[in-house]
Image 1 (cartoon, helix red, strand yellow):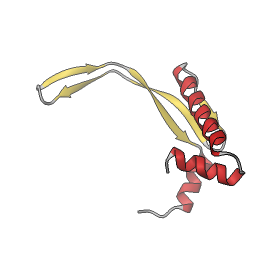
Image 2 (cartoon, rainbow, N blue to C red):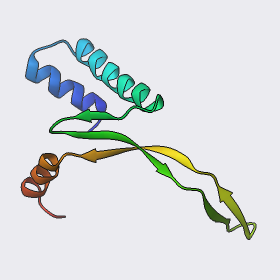
Image 3 (cartoon, rainbow, N blue to C red):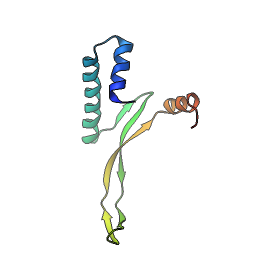
Image 4 (cartoon, helix red, strand yellow):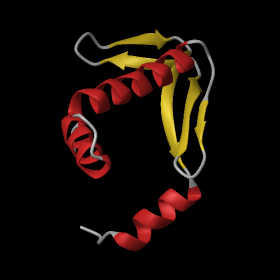
Length: 96
């Protein structure tokens, strides 16, 4: 499912203009991104949490040059689904 599909479904379900729904979805994503960029996690009860995970410094390998490199510690965004979300996916979808 793409962002356009989400906008179309919400627009159809609520009877709103696609442009208004598009602006709302874009604003939501911008707010989540800006919150994570400032170091704040985003918690959506019943859905999940957008959190910042810290990766420790580690040693990696450049295979083409056969050398080792240091990968510095860094933060990455992550999504942790809520328990009710996970349970719904487990019970309502077939294993492929």
